[in-house]
Image (cartoon, rainbow, N blue to C red; front, top):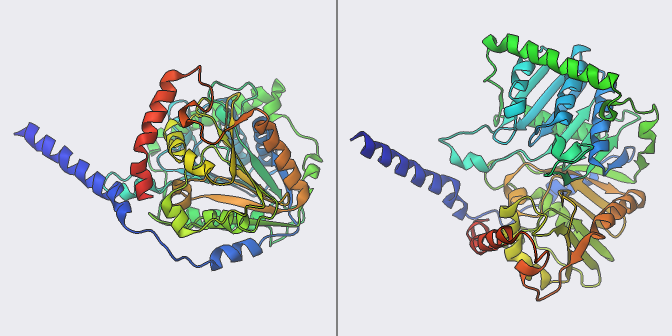
Length: 466
């Protein structure tokens, strides 16, 4: 009797999940969307902000540590995940050091994929034990609300005192920032937005307003697993992080070295910097990030240059916002190869879309290594750039929180183009008519190639819904 009841409950729950986490997407997505919000966001940006491309992950980590060191009042951290490694431990150590000086720190992480487990499992207790540090999770796991599982916080934003804002595709951890890259290392990209004049119209201030919305939103919940009885454990973890930080400083660890006083002077002047983001909403979001990309790409006269870890265009994306590819413009896309991709499921979606992409005027370059590329950027007409967390897929279009900065100015566009060209030099152009599974690295990773190819045959199930 107990066994039958258990099986019945499991079957009932499985059907419930199927209906509310999958088949719910049979509900039509928005088809007619006003352009007012995105247009307004793109015209509200700052003309006084300076921008610094952080192409090197280690340098990007150094800059974070330096800005934490300079913090006087507030630090805001919003990330999909903070992963294991020495760099993440030193990052937290620097944050607690700032908190000890009286800086107020808010940390928002994705409620499912935050990764404060394993090596970092004591961090929530350390945060709970410090009066100047707060931790909240965006959309924690609700086992009885499966439709919320798709509502992931995918932003990567770091703010200090309305003076510095770092935004891009990098999470925190050795996978992104180690000086000696681990096997799963990815090349990513961030931008530092610098507000030297403390302009209240700064893009950094706009980013702060967005973080305030996330922090106070009903979807965001305070960390509640760190209990009072864990206070001693939290204090012990704080002490261990302080010891690690002092030791790194004493040993002149380059990750925590003090940068020169004029380190931010290399930031470039721009004509305009705008901050854009998806709405904070469950299920189908208005595709603001996708609409912004299409808005600019449709105006391209000479070239559209895209870098994305993978591209999975869907019919609902095309229905929501129409992309008109000017045949007179050169269209280039840099993405991972089947050999280098760290995300087989996502790459399977790209693989099933590749023929359709190649039937357009798009030239595809697949990165051959080392490691993989994770940056999400575009450059249009050697003048307009976008860097952020947005992937060219339906998850980033309709489901995730996503954000980016749009930068007007040829100086930054040229820097970003050069950085993308370096990766393109280690890439192979995909020929039209080439069999998707054999386009790159035919000699190695046979099992991976076969598995991804098989998955690509099934990806229509997901693309049918999104």
